[in-house]
Length: 150
Image (cartoon, rainbow, N blue to C red; front, side, top):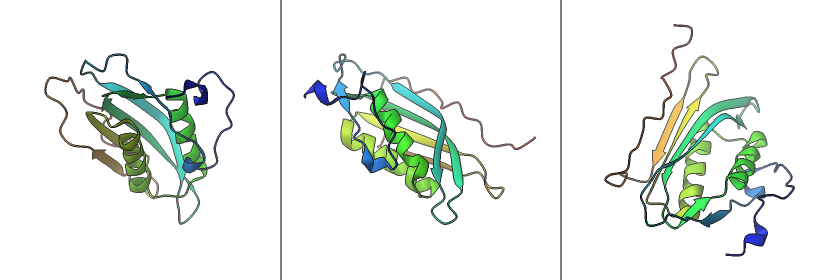
């Protein structure tokens, strides 16, 4: 892998769509150890593909790395690319999970998309690659079900 292509430490433009940037990966320095990495993304945004109105979500991405880690600046830029991207909640959440699975080939990955209500209905979307490895501590994602004002 050539680290000169990494975005880390370099100026980067904010992409206008998810496929306008490249997710980078770096070698896992503890590939011989099973552990969980979590990314919490409390300000994820995309657009409704029908109305063009903004949609907001809190994403929680958990994965048990194998040989690769996702480079966090590239992940941030990739997620920024959804801000002008029209897709349903399910499409965004699963697309992100599959992109990370394909890039990293982790032992296990899950993504929870906790979407804020529009039209009075919150939508939560969950996707994972299978069962987590035995012996890995997988904490609850910590997001309560939507309760409105109650």
